Image (tube, rainbow, N blue to C red; front, side, top):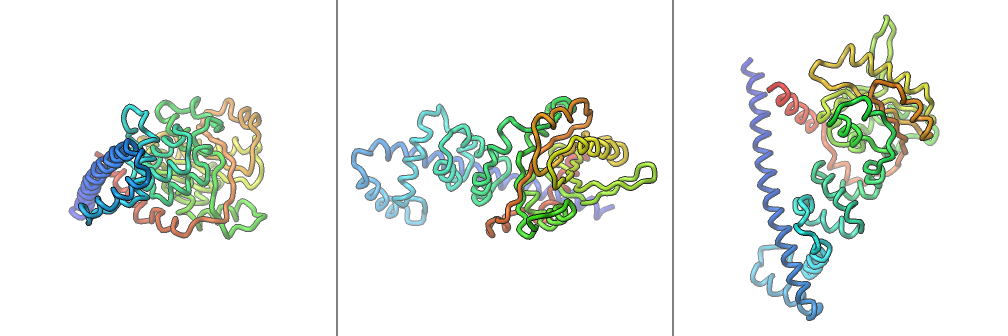
Length: 340
């Protein structure tokens, strides 16, 4: 009993320490970003002197602040650009102020549309993305795959708010899975096995909150065995998520199979404190109207998306993905909060 209580207490203590460290770093970063914004204004106001002003400013700042980095001529020009990008805003957008400087520069250089840029800034804050992951998400067009309203599901009809909105937000179309060893022509079993082998990459693509439980998860109904391709638990939605994989284009029959799995899962596995289980059907392709007709009248929450197979992922990205220990710690913290 003491050992169990100690572990739970330690998890809570560790959570508080991490939370405080994060707040301290966040406050310091906000002050730094606002400083750069103010310096950018001063530099812009003295633009009449051209590059000579920036070059002289670099020298003087390095003399007076020899132990502080960030005052190179290149970075001073970036501050000016940063100011010009946001000078018309009443206040510096919160997500922009919270993001590290390198993230902000990347967003300015790669994304011209401000609404799209702010969307990535908020996602980066919520997902605690590193610079490498932010770059990857931009390069794989996450905004178009997740934020644009052409996703096919029945979440509004089968889930109550805010669960329906959260479920809709987690869905992407298409999903892009990095499976470099998967051969060009594959069957569903090979796709599933490749995803399990690269589960850390898959978790990155599925998004924040997904925890992998098992592949080929067995359900028994009327003494017959049925197997779910991949079963996850979502830590924010507090529900099971069934992912069914199809190596062929969408067919209406797939919805009936997934609906059956969700019913069995809710009857046999779901706890009374869990939200309704959600189904995610991933197909090689789909027709819009066929999916819409197939989802009508279905009372279980189901989303249908296509997927693509990528053969490349930057090596340094893999180092930044969550480890199994990180995922288990997250689960323990969530469980501890849930039981309070």
